[in-house]
Length: 171
Image (cartoon, rainbow, N blue to C red; front, side, top):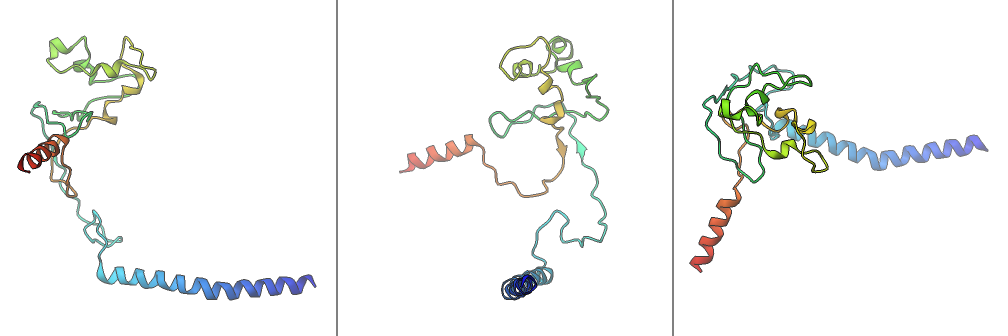
């Protein structure tokens, strides 16, 4: 009796899988074939086959002019306007702080890190830079002389407000 129930359950499962799974699996293979033929999937590999090794692009140069860049949005971390190629930032050393700490800014003429970098997670001020803000490259990056990999349609808030006021004065 148990064998009969197991056989009938197995048969029912086989029937259901052919009725429901076969069309689904077939549709996956059809869509995959369509995409391969049309090659419509946009990637940073520019339609290079996965097994083909593409010649790498030249590494862009770091903009090394010490001119501050405009920020695109409020609270954006400033970009680093100089090369940081051999800077050591680890748990024992932070080369950035040799110029940007509050004790060295007069000598180096570099901007001091924000006071928020001296706050702990509870909002209390510390004598030294906070451990959660110690690794500068988590937020700050060197500015590169490179074309964007993808199109950017970002419009900053200042420009949006200008457009809005211009539209309201026209009406």
